[in-house]
Image (cartoon, rainbow, N blue to C red; front, side, top):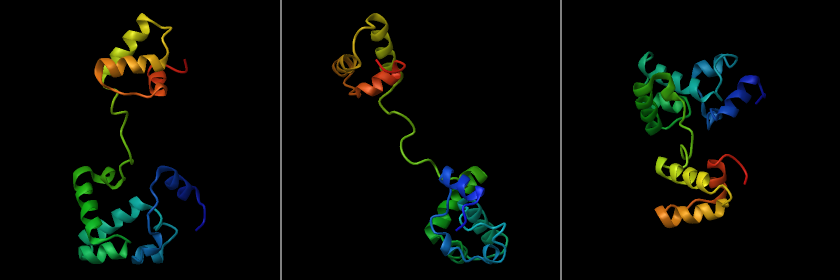
Length: 148
């Protein structure tokens, strides 16, 4: 597969279709210059369009676009809920540090202001004793604005 700018952009955004070789929909075979089987969002949209506009069954539309029937229904629900944005995959992993509640941030910043000479390791130990929250020293350093 050629490394086009489009391909590289989609790859960088994590939006490559997981099985581009499984896309057998006629539009993708007949016009690969526009319909890119590696473009996950375009494939999902065309799968939904084939079902709604062309009357293909969910099973047939899913198979022709390299998805399972179960995936078809997940894509449909995401599209109904959020439109085109729903066709983007959610970023994998956590959405942020779970332990850094506003209370934890206030605790760390207040202690650092009171005693700026205390190490991140010691602040992490104080936090654990006071609030039962265990943080790595690097997390404490990042909260306080850099290396210490």
